[in-house]
Length: 403
Image 1: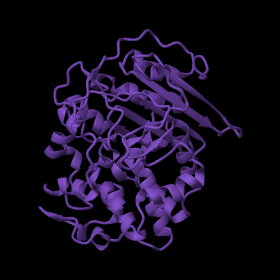
Image 2 (image 1 turned 90 degrees about the vertical axis):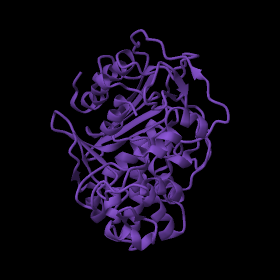
Image 3 (image 1 turned 120 degrees about the horizontal axis):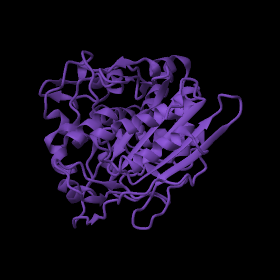
Image 4 (image 1 turned 135 degrees about the vertical axis):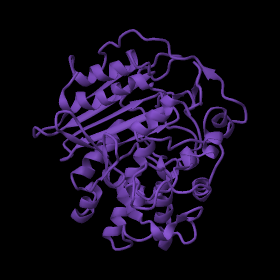
């Protein structure tokens, strides 16, 4: 893993949650996006908008293929918002990004899974303080791992200590660089993916530290299945997607295709020493991601979801309080239950999640009252160290008005 990739995965809290399997034939590299002329303000975003400038910079300075951003703000008692784009959806045709573009939202899936579990707790079907062993007997054992000593809550706030399967040599061999091209269409079961992590000792004893681990949410998805006999995807569709009318949001299962329209997902495949080659990573089997990063959505639907969540429309008060109870991470953000809490320079805190998978980087954030929400999506995954500040600048621009 390159230094740049390692840092962006940690900094953006998105550590490759989706990733997937096997082309029988190696995918051809596509043309690397050429440097683009400054993006004209050819979108619905108003001239001089700081967020407009911030997404332009991700393309013009950061070298990303394209960015789409959409906001909604009802804090003044009426709805206002805008959609803006920079760069392109497809470097071969020059097609622009649109509000209708579907996107792979990666680890944003974690918030959906968390809401399902919190609703189940409100219904008396489980407790967040139940042990993992209670629901998944014998699954988390060996090499110092013990499901009887970690709780469902610790899975959701990343304090379980279990190894992140994405950081293992096995994942690297299958999912990074040439491995991705060889395995992108294969299927792995949740148990097989968890077992990648269980080959290694935990990072720390449960409850004594914090480390972002995608393995936590693979287990969370397995628990949902055990509690209700239905998959996390079926429960999220019934409890959240249909309830909120998120008509462009779906869990694709093992289907590698993206619904139309969508941008091309450009990737350097998280190779250890990436060269200039850029690959089309749009299609892969989402089973590699599962409950940690499977979801497909749009900027509008994600705005609707996080706004409704922070407004208290999805959870009773007790579970809402649990959702928003944070732990320190030792980074620039705190973490609730499946939720990033990001403090900004102007004193505002925003609540949401980031998601990075092959060829796709998505973030949604909303204010504590759910009245001002932003989602933006980049159809490239190799933002370099020196440009990571451009990513944070989008939040600062939208919520603090800073250029």
